[in-house]
Structure formats: C-alpha cells, structure tokens
Length: 110
Image (cartoon, rainbow, N blue to C red; front, top):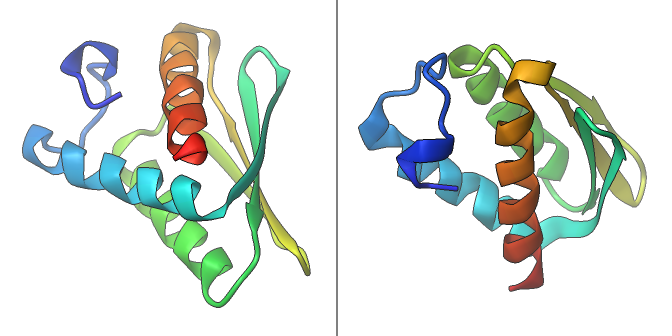
C-alpha cells in the first residue's frame, strides 16, 4: 500500500510523509485489529481491541487522514471492549479501499 500506484491524485499528503502515515496505520492494525469485514463494496469495518488511548489514537489518525484524503468517510464507534472503525469511499476510489483491505489484512496477521 505504500507503492505510489494505489495513491489517488486527490491525496494531498506530501509524498515524503506517506510512508510515515502508512506506518501509523500498520502499527495500529498490527497491535489492535481483531476483525476486518467488508459489509458493502464501498465500506470496510474494523474492530479494534480497546485499551488505553485507543479511541483517541484512532480519532487522531482519522482526523489527519480526513485532512489529506477527503474521499474517505470515517465513522468511529467507541465501545467497552472494542472500538469500531468504518471507512467508506465513493465508487471512483474503490481501488484505494481494495488496497487498504489487503494492507490491513497483512498488518493484522503480523
């Protein structure tokens, strides 16, 4: 997912910062991902194990990602044991969601 081919032109994050951001998402998913599903073609649902500051960490990443990639729609659902995260895109950005799903599945298995 860090390859430039999957990043759409509409992404405003400077190219030199992209590997750092991808690394933050990878670390979150490697540490906290308990389930990943695709309830709709244009939406991913993540379940992240709760813990100290997990919700705040997710909200921080979501806020920064929203600032550079306005094509994502994020929904964070806090819970006692899990924090839910939904990421949706429009049809033009479905390949980005595909890449994210593949990358997340790999990070969660590590």
